[in-house]
Image (cartoon, rainbow, N blue to C red; front, side, top):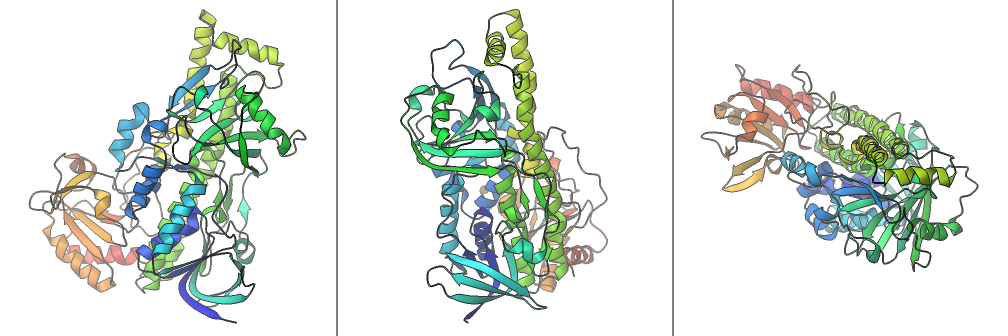
Length: 588
């Protein structure tokens, strides 16, 4: 049997696995990716890419393609609730409510202040081919679709995996130092003894990917998601929601769409053959011409792996956590898993770190996923609260709910009160659509960081307020600086496998310390002085407000753009302090 050697084997060619391949190549690490399917996903799946994910894609030259090919900002800045797309009844074709979402509307300035990137929208059936294209460009990566991981065994120095080539039917072995499992746990979970824990079997989501011309029935292109609630169809999930799928536009002229319905897992009324009639009934378009590409159904669950690592094998993405679709945290978390893991594997492969650094992956990422799965479940269930806020009564006859809608839409004192109540209730769904702190405010409390004993910033209970900080474990705040005569983000000076040290105008001694520390540990460590006499200019004064250190203090940023260590003032021996901190981060 043929044996191939590689530093890292990646099992799974979805969003997380392909991202891991790209990130490792950018760090100069060879890898082989195997995926049992012949192509990337044919299903729309996830589509929303939050700011942190877009920052990571910007670092790797992918963001611009997503912005060019995906939704324009003006087509994803809101979500809205409607009674129907068409119809001529007194309750038809009414917009019930519209709210800002994903950095649009009144939230646009806040989102633009806190990141160099806006959020993106690009369905997974189009994103995965783009990621595959980027992965295959690198001579360091082998991307092998139609190759299935059958089994793997570990020993003290590596992992031996058995792979079957789907074309030839032959099996071969891959000998790797590490295995990254992005296989949804199919092979990795049973082999590593990983259990996914949490509520499952909650709702059967039925997603229908179809083509149709809906442009005559849409007069507002700003909502990315349109929910339908009407007396006949029931509440939000029962009635359905539609999202444009492009491929060339994501406004009313979108050629493709996906509609989501929800059923109980044991609902006897669920029948794929009934989906098209139900769609036409939902839209109030009985003669709508449409082409169905795929009807898929999947179970809503909020589960988390009880461990992320077994020896030299680690899990990412859906193999580690699975989320309800609300808040869009599933795919984003998986890509961020890959980004967090890649620099650690690179340091291990190069001999710059010990296994303690690999331990930090679970210590850092699992608590983030735990919060995200709980949050997604909460925001999913909160849609039923919206139904109640609109006056919908579960199980009530259509006439009763129609009366509630008539009141809601009426020009009367009761109608005004009903709309005010609806506003109060629907605004609670900002936990899903403006979860700014969930998206860029997540942080690590243990792992490859050196804490400084300072308390964390406050966290908004609704998840909508992000507090920038340079506290160890947090993402470095984005600030525009002047560097080399150009306007750059603090994030542009970081990443790409580099450690970076930021200091103030009196921090010249740190540059010598950084050079010595880089030489000792064999890592790339760049230093920047922000202020008078430095190489970076804080012309707006924002960095000085956010840096939380003195002019002679220092902030050490890891390759994943999270702060690893900081000191407010220069200690007596800055070189010794920096080397001690860097050694702890690398597990030395």
